[in-house]
Amino acid sequence: MVRHSKQRDAIFDNLCSRYDHPTAEDIYFSLKPTMPALSLATVYRNLSQLEGDGKIIRIESAGTARYDGNINLHYHLSCINCGGVFDIFMDNDCGLCKKASEIFDGKITGHSVLFTGYCSACNKQVG
Amino acid sequence: MVRHSKQRDAIFDNLCSRYDHPTAEDIYFSLKPTMPALSLATVYRNLSQLEGDGKIIRIESAGTARYDGNINLHYHLSCINCGGVFDIFMDNDCGLCKKASEIFDGKITGHSVLFTGYCSACNKQVG
DNA sequence: TTCGCTAACGATAATTGTTATCATTATTAT
DNA sequence: ATAATAATGATAACAATTATCGTTAGCGAA
Image (cartoon, rainbow over all chains, first blue to last red; front, side, top):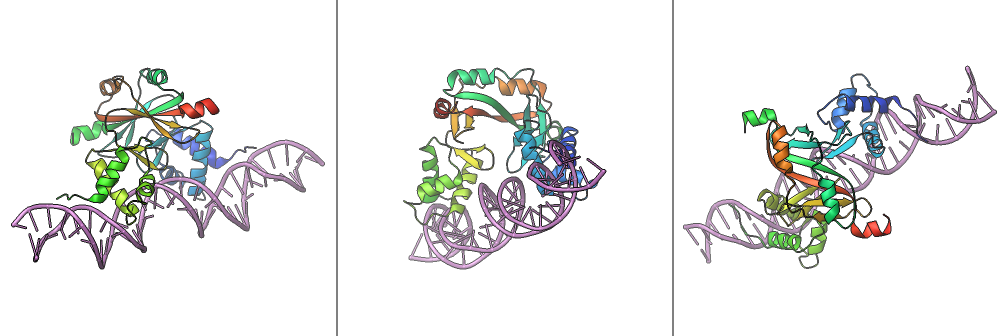
């Protein structure tokens, strides 16, 4: 039996209101001022649960996991320079799953794409 | 100045001779019988170095990093059931980078694709 | 509305994967 | 052969995450 909790709501709302693909800690520190009693464990617990429920997405970027409140299909770019993660929306998935299904002897249920390179700002500076 | 080492050779050879995308620990335990003095730190050290040299690829799958001795462009599927990682070779990259470059205001230098689903064996059993 | 059950919490210990440190070993230029 | 130092093995340190456990609070039934 799943119960409602203020903490889970706050975590979900915080994640959905931002587009920087925060880590668990990012969310924790972002909520701490308005929820001083919040525990980091609660953030981890709820992010895992929300991910399990398919309400948020977990992005596996080197080392630390990042989260995304946008569950519509889209891709990400991890900036080599600043470490930020940015959205890349493609009008379609390039038939990636379909193509893969044709050649792979198993069942494909989803996919994620992580580009590497330089974000807009870093590309102008460093290139 | 980079020096030759028996350990690095063994690690590289071990990785290139297998197709199960092992973790650092997998490689460590695989080599331990024939190299009893091998240290896990040496495995981590050399995997990082080989990756930096572009001789092997690091796959970011949930939690633990896995490695791949095949540096030709190809994708992977992580099996939901058995946790194994399998190769998916596509004749081309579906123009993924080209498409992304067109719509992304930055510079894209590479990409990785991780499919999720069921591998051949698990699909037959569990579906 | 109160009561009781227990999911979820907060605090923190434990675990896991990985990196850093450091004394020792071994590779390689001279 | 020798000297310089890259790489090693052992292990401490670290960072991210999960587990534990006593307490709190959401919520269905009385």
